[in-house]
Length: 249
Length: 189
Image (cartoon, rainbow over all chains, first blue to last red; front, side):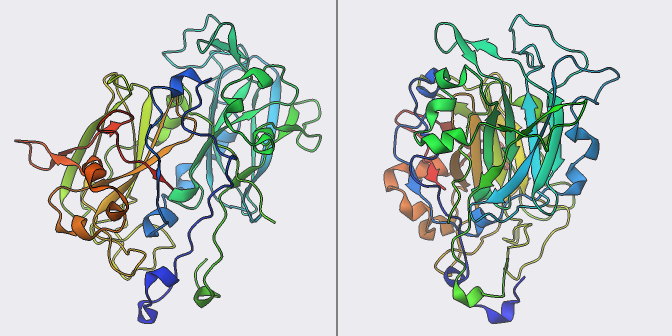
């Protein structure tokens, strides 16, 4: 941290975060996703230069994590039903730098496509041995790993015969308010993906494809679980002002 | 060479199973210094209906104007018990509330100070990417010189400023209006 005797105007010492390229994040209004119509703002967003309020953010370390909670198949006395899978990947920034010791929360439906949530009325069985909730902290290289069961597809009311593809929700804070991300991970080869208005909300094809995990032998556990790889990229930093070289980071 | 940041997706209707663990409405435990406040409000959709499946997250400095974060370079005291993070899911009537302290002023980009404010993220079913906004405080003289409020048309600034609740000392009302004539100002962050 910098000492105060070198006080210079903060404008020269603050490196904000780069905004994602146009089209690579969803708009608020995406009419095929019907729930967005009454909930998307109608007026243009106002561009907010990043200040100290946006380059800082809540810090969650080891104290907020139970190390056992990366394995969603071991949270109950019995084993959950379903195809066991492992997910691994890295959390990095747009410059490829690892984001270490950062919190990841996940939640998902069970193998039958039912969430353990009071408003989920899908006529599929709950699994007494599966809560569908996990969390972990990345290691110093930004790596993480979860063990769970593959979530089932489930119907929803967006349009006639609408089904969500299998997906797992991911929530990350990253290092700053400006890096907060909530997303969903999908599975390769799922025939429902091309029809899903949530998946299709982002214009950029490559950005969309980044939400589909890849089957991965290295993550696969022999005699245990098929493995999928899912890397997560958070916003990168603007170039650090030269006055700061060797200073903050 | 720059990688494309992962694209955002909605939290969906069932986020609370994953978010519940980190819900925190009482942001300032006993012993934290500052003016005690309660912020209460509702999230309301384009039909004027409450949004019962939203979650509001806040991030704020302590009463001295210092963030509990390694990149806050300001020479101001930290308070070990104060993280400055809150999260509240809305109830069936779209309501949320936080108890906290009024934050101090923090550095502005031009070297001056920002008016006291709280950074806010809002997530909900139907929202593919979070909404970012700010809560400012009523009758604060610094509001008149705040660089972020100055980015906003005067006619819309009031949507960012909480209102005192008559007869309830320290209670402020601040709503998230997603559409309509009083649509809240949201930022591209």
